[in-house]
Length: 451
Image 1 (cartoon, rainbow, N blue to C red):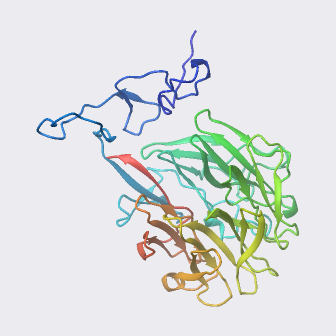
Image 2 (cartoon, rainbow, N blue to C red):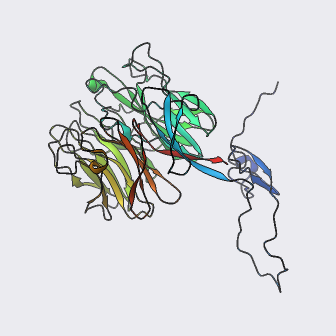
Image 3 (cartoon, helix red, strand yellow):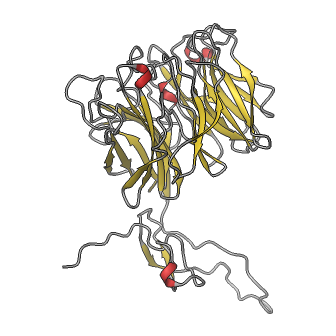
C-alpha cells in the first residue's frame, strides 16, 4: 500500500532545463508553464499564474525592441509582525506589534512561552547562565517562521523529573513542536537548555545546546545542524569534546564558528570552526585568559569580530580576526575590574558601514552600559547611553536585535529590576524608545503574515 509523500519545497528552486532529471535537486522542475509559487506564504505550494492587467490604455507605437522585467501583481498583502519574548511569571508570553509603534501582550492561549532565561540559571554550578548576560542568545526568524525553544520541559536545575528541551515553529497562527533535544551520549543527565538558534542554509538551522554537569569542568556543549524539510539533525564535530556553552554559532567564510563561554571553570576557551561533515572542530585561536569566553560574533568589512565576557582577573574584550592574515588582535578593552563585563550582542548596520556593540562595563567608566559604534573597527565611540534609559546596574541585559526591511534595528533591553524597553535604531543611526515593558527575555524576532 502506497504511503503518503509530503513535499514542502515544490518548485522552490524553479525550472532546470540543463541538468539530467535523474540529478535534479529537490524543489526543481524540468518544465512548467503558467505557474508561480503560491504567494500566501504556504510551504511547497504552486498555482496557476495570476492574471495580468493592462498598464497603458493605448497600443505601443512602432516596433517593440524589448522589455524590462516587471513583477507579477499579487492578490495578497502581507504584514510584518514583531515578537519579543517576555516572562513575568503569569500566562503572558510575548510582546507583539504590527508596526513597531503600538505593542500588545499575548498569552499562552495564543503562543507557547519561550524558555529563554527560565532554565539553567544556576551560576554556582553551571557557571554559564548568569542573568546578566543570558538574554543575548539569538533566536531565528527564518523562512517566514519563528523558531524558539519551548518552556514545556524540566531541566536538571528545575524541580521534578528531567525532560528533554523542545524546539517550536510559529507561522503566525499555529505553534508546532518540531523536535526534542536528546541527551548527549557523553552526559550523565538530560540536555539542560537550548542556547541559540541561527539560520545556516535555506532549509537548515544551527542549534547550540548546553549539557549541565554539577562539576563545572565537565559541563559540555553541542552544536546541532537541523534540517527543517526532513526533520533530521546531526551533531557537528562529534569527535571534539566541547567545554562550556556556545551562545551563538556564526557562519563565516563558509564555516561554522564558535567560541564557548566559560564563567567559573579553570579551563581556557578557544575559537573553533568546522564544516558540516567534519568529525572534529578545528582550533583557530586560544582566548587570552582562563574563565573568559565568547558571547557574540559578527563579520564586519570582511573580518570576524568576537565579543568576550570578563572574569575576576581579565577585563572584557572585543577581538578581531583579520581575514587576510588570520591573525587575532584586541580592538577594544573594558576598563573596570573585570567581573560582570561583556560585549554582546555585536551587529552591523544595514549599509554595512558601521559595527555596533552593546557594552556592559559593569564597574568601569560611565556610562556603565552603552552601545558602541565604529566605522573602521578600531576607533569606537558611544552611540547610545543605556543608563539614561534604564538606570545604572550590573544586571542590564540586552537581547539580540532584529533588522527590519527598512534598515531599522529593534533592540530589547532589560534591567536587573526587570524594567525594560525596546529601542529602535533607524538606518541613519537615530535611537528612540518604541515600547516600555517589564520582564523582557531575549531576542527580537519578526515574521510576515497574510493580511
